[in-house]
Length: 162
Image (tube, rainbow, N blue to C red; front, top):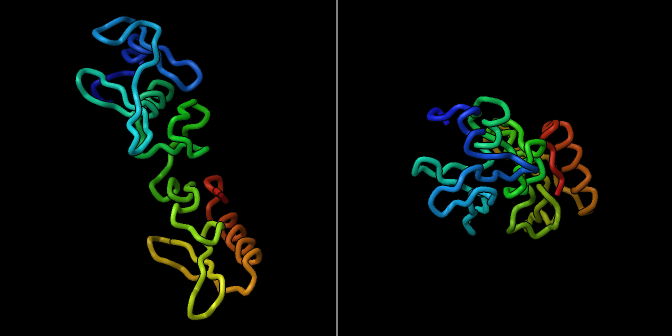
């Protein structure tokens, strides 16, 4: 964003409810139409400014706060929801704490897996880039409660249970 100021972006775009609209018609972009498009592979919305693609959530954040942090977290994990109240500065670690459960999850609960040899539900999480085993449990719901408690304790405002 170093090529722009929030003021220059506000001359090009109007922000309304998480969407940027073109203020002027240029080429294929028509005044009053939403700016940007998403790709199917990551669902982030991008907009071309001066022949360079920019992530719209980064443009919106910069327009509102005047700086561009290293990482921006979508609080509700919806990459297409770019309302300013859904965007917050985060570290990479904080952003990972706000992830949903993995697509290959088989227990149905975040941070809970089946340990085949012990025949128990295992709770484990990453701390400082290292896997930490929290415990193993006979009961799946108990394992989930333990996982929730650990997330509440260590994830703070970035906690996400689903």
